Length: 348
Image (cartoon, rainbow, N blue to C red; front, side):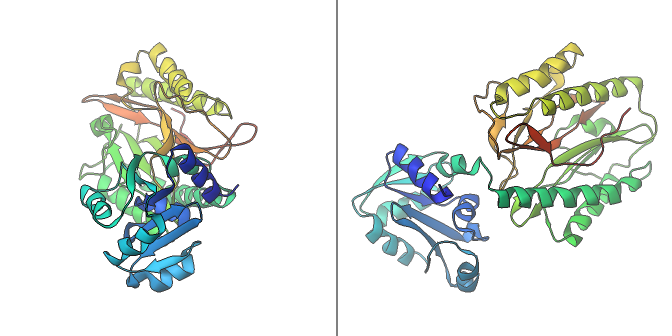
């Protein structure tokens, strides 16, 4: 069954006869069109049509797996109107703007139905081509990290480390997947501590979280490294996080419950007296978006299946002291898992 077949089956289950897709990542997932922010897709029982404007005539023809209609609104809506008249048409409630919904109401004689997660559900399982794109993005990130690692020393600004990582990704033919996190010393207590002008000091732990976006697909990895000799307390924190991370990675397999993986890592940190400082979920899916399903969080009922790509990233954040996060990118395989991030993890 193709991804379009799966989506049409999901639409039937949601009691809609057509689906108007406006989320850029979902547009790309259905069509292959890489400028999804400037495209929409109408999916019906007969197939799918990409709508975009004349700036993308050649690009859409080269990239899209489905037929294209080149037009701007209101002609876009007028063409689609004839394909869906009298039907129940789903729209992406978590993405379509109020103005976008009003435009559909003005031009279509249909029953509009809010939907959630239809395309995202199909995207949970990556095709071999998608897995290869993620694998290639992570391989590039591993190479760039190895190139930049020697500059992590006392006297270097966080911003300079981030710039070197970003430059390496660009030179490798990728985009920067998200804001690079370089958080040293006390700033390590901020889970999203993007690089600042702070100068790294001797004894700091430095948390680096970055990823590439290559052919539209993301990688995601975090390493915490020591500059000089960190305090005994921070070494204790580091080793507790490493224990939790490696135990959770080892438990990844088809049928594993995402919520139980989170509980496993959280339980290890609790034994070390650190669970209250684990301020986020264990991990998330990665693909066309840096954050997508499944969700490895407390209480999640998601179940892992072969072809899913997830992060495992426990962290401990001590206010005014510092923090540690260690993250691997992991593919769920038919009989277990494969760790896609190959950068070594330090042993303190």
